[in-house]
Length: 123
Image 1 (cartoon, one colour):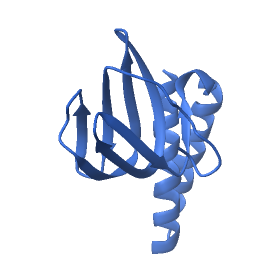
Image 2: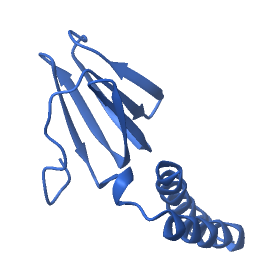
Image 3: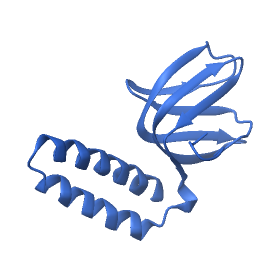
Image 4: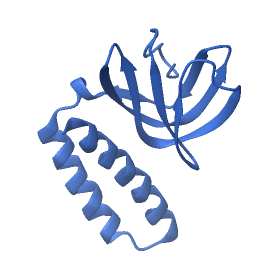
């Protein structure tokens, strides 16, 4: 769920989540868990097909064979234009390299992480 909508609601065989401490895989009967999510790629396997979804940070709750994910934003790989993603990655990289103050570095680093993830799933 994103702040303004339910992004995805389906049954899947496996989920790989980008947590703040690394990736975790979730299969049936996973132990209950609450985890922070980093900006990264969530992989979802349904009937031997993998789907890549860009997550822009949030939280995941795993309980009773359900995964509930609350995110700031999410985007399917199929909805990302590869050329636009590459352009935004270049712009974000340039902005990060030009940042001089600590505040600018933090802001441009987050924008760069988002741009990298969008570019990654577009490939």
